[in-house]
Image (cartoon, rainbow, N blue to C red; front, side, top):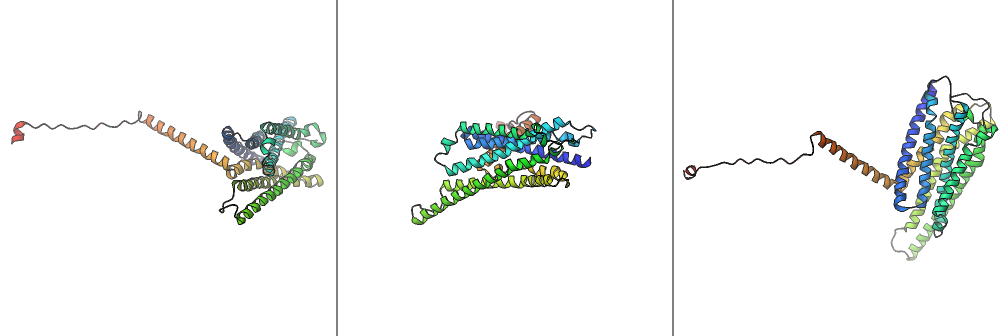
Length: 336
């Protein structure tokens, strides 16, 4: 019971941090979209929304972990909660794939990018992404072999879902996503390197004066850097969970459920906290917008502080009038 309570407290803290961080990034990206109307920023906003929903979903599991009630959550309600968590996590992973593809397309087809990735296409991609995510998350509810035959609370992933579901997710989800990530990264790195070599040849030939690189090459390397950080974060967060789940399927006597649920699943969910931190640090536009928001909040708090201070002292201070003392001298004293 004490271990369950500690796990519930960790879930509560993690859920709060995930919701707060992604809400800030979503607000910053919304302001950027209103100002610049960029299609790529819509994918970043969708990632923040998906990660925030993961925080909301796992917050629903906190009460079942920390409560001392003898009756755990019903199996149907627990299955719905875990399906919602899985759907949000799938939406987050698919959005990272969409961001990687968007950056890959911008580097691979720079002249045709805006004609291909229009607002209508981006909206269709996001809508299809959420439909696929909810299909994946709620799949165990319609497939009996993905469900546990015996339910014992408290509510957790493997309390309602069989490890076969993890094996299926690995085969049709994690492994193809990882393959596409590596392909996008390698091809983007190859293109960026070719651009850099062409610029160096032009500089040596004297066609380009100076040592500074054109913005196009710099943006290529920045895109590769952002995608590589996202891929690394995704791999380090979810690979241990999927690999250990496959081991559990192959070895039924191993009983790795405690490790999977208490540590590795929590590590995978923690990827939703890393994504907004990555964008807040690596994405220059988002970082500058967050800085402007912080300055605005600081100015607002300063104005409120001085307003309260002036109200406490009976209104704004007025300049004090100096009193002048008039000295009169008689005519006799003046002549004397």
